[in-house]
Amino acid sequence: MKPRLLSTLFTLSVGIASSFIPQPVLAQIVLERIQVQPGPEDMVLDSFQVSPRLIISCCGRREAHKPYGEMVALDLLTGKQFAMKRLNEPGGILFRPHGIYLDRDLLYVISHEKEPDYHPVLVYRVEGNQLDFVELIHTDQQHSPNALVTGSRGEIYLVNDSGKRGSLWEKALKLKRASVVKLEKNSHGSWVSETVATGLGYPAGINRIGDQLFVGDAVLHRIHPYMITEEELVPTGEIKGLKGNDNIRIYEGQLLVPGHVKPLKFINHAKNPEKLSPVDVFLADPESGEYRIIYSTDGETISGGSTAIIYGNQLYISQVFDPWILKVELKPGFRQ
Image (cartoon, rainbow, N blue to C red; front, top):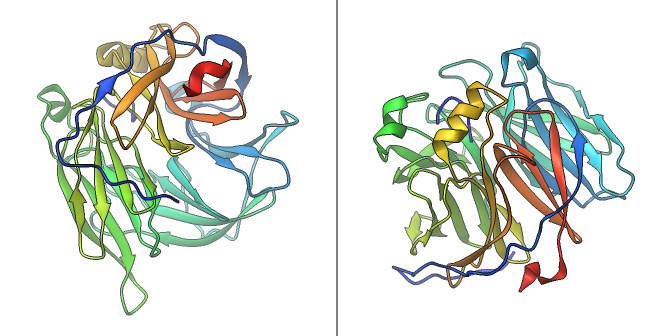
């Protein structure tokens, strides 16, 4: 979620009822804070290398941390980390990374290069510890991109988190002006864009399982599932109750999503790092809509948690602002 303010196929029936599964929050053993770089807002699990690692999108969002912007690799076995070297970029790129997605060896990066209206998607090929530039994608409908995912046909789906970038009124009045945009190449090899879903609150996350697309909505506290067809996105229900949901990751066929459960406290945290912002991490079943909380904090262990990834029995939580991620031991019962 931005600080300015605020593969298996599953079919959901229309009007699916979501429900919270009450049970003790099991994942409460904090192992360590791993120092990385400022603003580790998004991250992906890279399991295609010899050693599994996190690729973390780091961008300074507080004045003290600007203009830092890098991709940081964290080896999950050795704990070693480094900024990944970017190669063969065209001149003039201002690397301000936000949402990322890894499709095998291709890393897709939303970069907020120029406010308010230039937010390209940068594509890199992951080659060991380096990122080799492939292409820059920019269309006239990328006005406030927050997160993205690729489709099975080579297309890209991204969420514009608002109708007007930086609009305070949209958040305050819960206006549903955000959208999903599909990017794809035409017959001439040029990228074109099309709005394929509208009427969303503040979508800060998007992901896919087979031909089922899951789009977050932090204002309306739900996830919108869609069936992907060649012609359109078909709504297939709602998963409700995931308050303040941010980036969506997939874990064993379930949706792993952190949430800013006290939006006003998140806004205060954005202004002042000493102010705490509570975080819940949800694990949701996309078929039934049932979900449970596998980790919860009042903000003392981490504030502004934005992405969650599980590797083995360990949960990693990144955040919007401060230069570290949280590592938590998950007790065996978290899968039940």
